[in-house]
Each structure stands twice: as C-alpha cells, then as structure tokens.
Image (cartoon, rainbow, N blue to C red; front, side, top):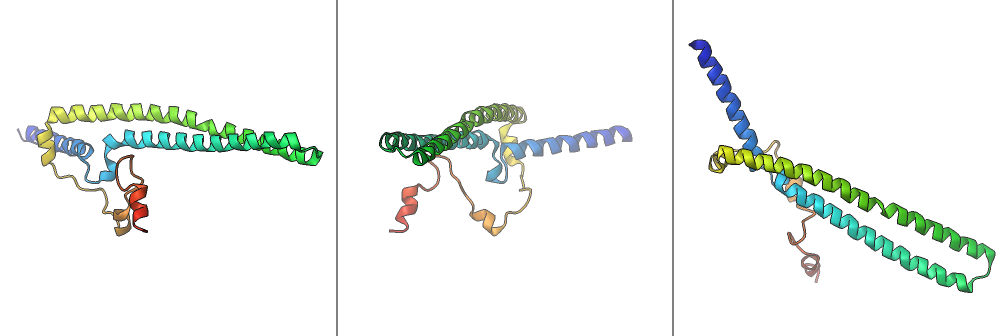
Length: 171
C-alpha cells in the first residue's frame, strides 16, 4: 500500500506540474511571452519589411528614371560609365529587395507552426478547464529590470501611441 501511495503522489506532482505549465502558456505572467500575439508580431514584421522594400524599390525606380534622362543629355564617356555604375548598383538593390518575398514565405511557415501550438494549448486549456487554469498562480521566470519595464515597443498597428501622439508632445 505504501508503494501505491508513493506512486500516486508522484503522479499527482507530475499532473500539478503539467497544469502549471499549461497555465503558464495559457496566461503567462509576463505579457512579452503571450503565444497568441506571436503570429501578429510576425505578421507585423512581414508587413514592415514589405513596406520598406516597396519604399526602397520606388526610390530606386525614380533614380533609374533620372539616370535614363541624363543619358539623353550626356555624351562624355566617363560620365556615361558612371551612369552605368549607378544603374548596376540600382539593379543590385532591386535584387536585394527580393529577400522580402522569401522572408515573408518563411515567416508564414513559422506562423502556421505557432498557430498549431496555440491550438494545442487551447485544446489542453479546454480539457483542464479555463476556470481552473485562471486560479493557478503563474510567476515570471525572472523579474524585469526597471529599464525593461519601460520597454513597450514596437507596437502592433492600432496599439500604443501613434506618431501623431508622439509629435504632439513636442508642440
């Protein structure tokens, strides 16, 4: 009987540990570790890199147009060689901006994996009972420093302060 009691107590400790782990993923003590916002953060990365790539490519296109106009008025071979160099550099920038599409595809794969994990965590939370998990005290892995407590960015679209809000502080 004593051996059965020890086995039962060991199993109980294991189940309690699993419950705390599930609660920690379901409602983390630190907002920086919320799994349900990871997909949104990665989507924001894809959007930001896409916007940056588009801005760069538009600027390079304008530069290429200016180079094309200069070609019609320049006859000096040395200056034409410089225009060729500028065009070559522009093409390098266009090629480099192609990284965004590949990056977006890779991040989308990661988002799908995170979504799968999130669904599994939600299923475990349902099995255990969300009300029960809310009762579990979840402690942060480490205490944040004062400086870390001040860090809140970058924010997702529609969250936090807008650039206009920040600008108004200086008016």
